[in-house]
Image (cartoon, rainbow over all chains, first blue to last red):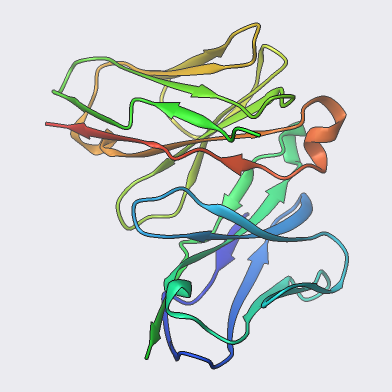
Length: 112
Length: 116
């Protein structure tokens, strides 16, 4: 089957570092995406991993281990505007489809 | 460069009515994906169109349908609306064909459908 798990909520302090974990099970893995979604808005693309390892993009980094079915998103130097939901999504190539399978999202609250 | 656009922003309908939602992809993108995000739930895949054809659909009843036009814009139709169809409907676009397997999906702002 297909399953994506991530924590429901996390709280962190402005200026700190936070790591949001994601574990997945899918039969047709073809890449993992992280999106940021502010309440009532569209998801915006943050990062993409298809090979094992760390991808760094400014204050955001994402890590993937395909053998463990595990990824994390690392946010450094947290800002108040980082308060949002973070969505982990796996691209599934089963049935020749490249749909994204999403977790339920992790709501991050950044406190002053 | 313009992003993915969707219309209308909000749509209010009553049970049994039909809703039509529209999406224009990023210029150069031929793949359009539709997702439903019900309150408190994750995004659920609805439909995928590429180069004018329906390529795949998610686990939704047949009253959810759509099409893609020659200019690659797309329309999602929901017939016989039910209360549980109330959700944010998101459209995403990407490069199509063989590149659909590697390209990122970029999302539009969504249409919030409320069924009364």
